[in-house]
Length: 147
Image 1: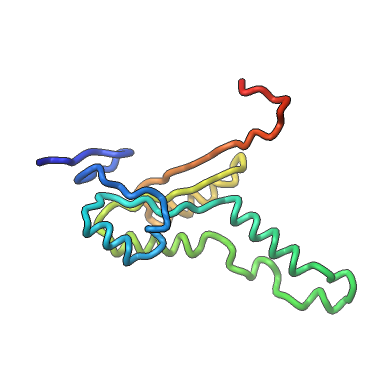
Image 2: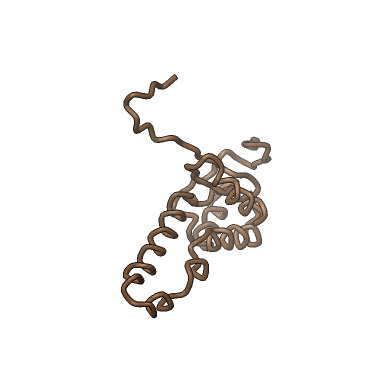
């Protein structure tokens, strides 16, 4: 029986595509999903707001109290020296592309007007076959209509 289909322009042998979840955190699990018949895999999601939050939180704690003592300014490395970006995620996409024989789809959650674009470009450069993009707006102003 031919179950082949296409999804986002990708030709798949069947419609079984594990969605973004912790299952794609480990390469071994992704291989097992492929062995079990998955025709593509959607990577776990990279959250733009999580990366931004971690960067701001680190900056807060590494600068807290530095106004008290002049030498406190040199206690910690600069924020840019910490690995808080999507590097681990990008590395996992590259490894998955090298190890799997099925399409690898990146997943990105963006909250800013355009900040997610740089992450999308990195996912593309890592070799992802497609990108699942989740852009959303959290309505917090009760005076603003849905129109």
